[in-house]
Length: 342
Image (cartoon, rainbow, N blue to C red; front, side, top):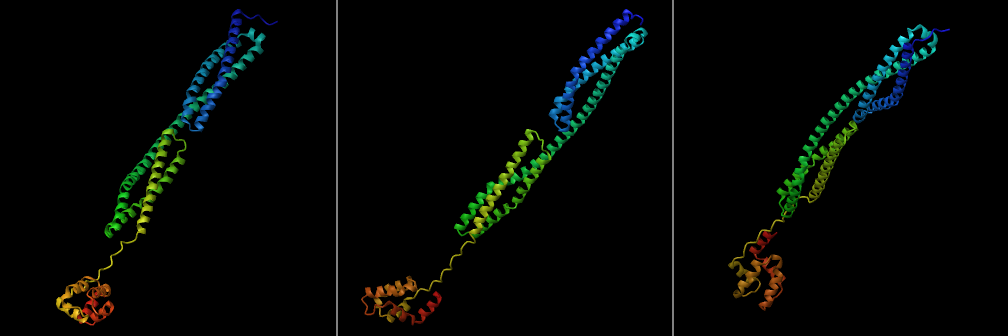
């Protein structure tokens, strides 16, 4: 028959059993929380999500605190079990129970200790991940700053073009209308020079698109700034296309048409020569002024018609203006004047 168990030992056994139950209850509360927070933090690290890390990391720290408290209780239970194992009478009668308690507490201690270590290791990984994320954010800010500076320089030029191009276009059109070749050429050359900024505008778009691919997880503020840059580049491209259209129109005008040179004016027929003309076509000397008005004021091509009118008015025998021109052409000074007209 097994020796009886002392009251002190029985109380210690009861306390130990109560403590093991408390450990089991705490462990059951810890496990689902630990899994949720550990997996959540691991996912945040894997996704490089600063928000997820910020959500799960402090919660996992709370769970680890609970684990530490549970491990403290485990240590107390193990100490009590050590006292119980020293009681021979108890061990003879309650060995299987003590064995079960020891195994349960030892397994819990091992499991919780491993989880605590894993959680602390994961917390270190989270710290490193945050450093990498912040470094990436700084890099994104720096690269975006460079892009903004480049686009700002381009848009400063585009603003100037938008202001000056309409003025130059109007100046070119007015110059063509006024046959001002120099102003037309100068205006067109300046507009053509604006076209060189087209490649610069076109080159900015792929740089911005490359930035978007390099930093796919930008926050809303940076995404908005990237879109503003794309909007500016679109305006720049549209401005240059408009200039190209205007240049095409103005080039189509060609050169200012030259005025036909005026024919050299025939020298005025003197009074002495008018008398010879009058004699050649039978006009009375008293009508010399009327004849001079025709020969000196009318172009040679109209002489025949005007002489016919004059002869008719003067009631001459011969009113054939063409015949009169033939007679006049026989005069030497008339032939010389005809050469000047040609």
